[in-house]
Length: 582
Image 1 (cartoon, rainbow, N blue to C red):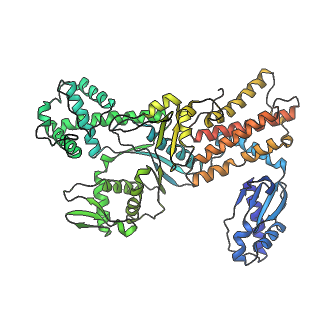
Image 2 (image 1 turned 135 degrees about the horizontal axis):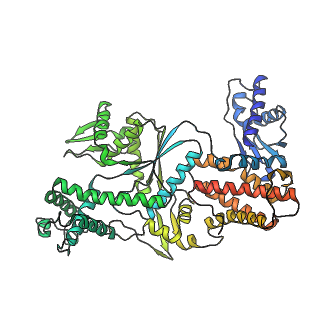
Image 3 (image 1 turned 90 degrees about the vertical axis):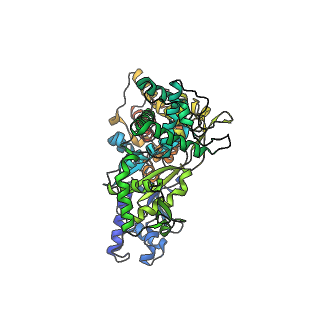
């Protein structure tokens, strides 16, 4: 309907241009939006206000000229000029039902926009492979997966990517932690363990696998490990110096080959578990990009920055001129000991993204990374990208409550609730939906009891029940020996307030997808579906659907089946199932 109305108003614009009232070269970006209140019509058009200044006319005067020059449109009942120059459009009731035919014609593709020919890379989750995913990571996973589906529906060619941080200090700490647990399994005394090591049960599991497959191959006396070791906390030492010294001792005692074997066992086990965990959550990636593969790219990127005059040497270190691009200060790329920084790796990674030819880059990061955004944007601009190329979307970690008790989560201590445990307790559907109910940057308390409840207060249950209710009615139809006949439906009979409201809401689906995609807000789909469910349940309570009158029965069944298709399409975008029975 909106497309049809847009064409009608474009005809009026062309007529005004032919008459010399509006400049002939003007191509205004006017909008036709659904009205918030039915008393102001079904749609509102702002064309008069967008052309008022170049036409040098009063917008209300132009609004009347637009109305006078509109071609015949059988879908329009009446038009009214409102406010500073809006044109309120009242659509004939029978025209509203056209949306049902559109939904049936497109089915699962209803709401999908044409391919815009542009490539978009969406990087999300990217949790360090130092432990299982916990409920905090789940929100980024659910949001990223829903956003990827939403952007694809809006016409983008989307690539989903997970950046595997498989290099650097945290991975070395994991390797050292696994090795120390392995030594315990070999029979070495285990009365000490670094305060800054990874302590979760999963570390024991990895060590057990290593011991089971390799026996005592990597065993060294624990006394040799702790000889000449700086003190740890809380023995008056520095936990950071202590763990770094343990990492160095592991590398020295094991040697390059054996250390790599221990390192890779930890990395491969956790990365594979993360991959399997996400797949079970309905989240899959097109690419798993290894940080360790960046070594040649880092050299290439640093050279590009140097040749462009965007880096300099100072005190033996190499610095990036990020302050030239609005960052608060310049940043170190290579330390005075010749070791590259995490920032250098990130620049290389994003440089690699640019060279892969994406039209748009989106990163989904935890909110604690907000201070990192300006320097990454600065690096991309220095490498020749415009400042709109990259969007960084921040996600607040969800906080889990059991009753009134907040659950603490720390990967290092091992005291956390895993995403797998959450899935097993509340189910993937509830978890996926609850995670995307709010804007990603808003704080979120995850109510476990509500997520598990089968009540109208649980939004995902409420929506899924609406879908299942329609399926139940269709089973009742079959039990009565009847069938739905689309051709025998008189859609003009759908004239009650509930029916017109549902038709109007169905007509908003395409617009909601486009708006939600443009604003990177999957929660708009969640709210849309909840409102549609409210309309469906209200309709069920107000009107019988399996009435004796054939044309009316088929019309009402056509309406609810159209709603059912939209429930399926919308829930699919959010990664939530649409059950036939509840």
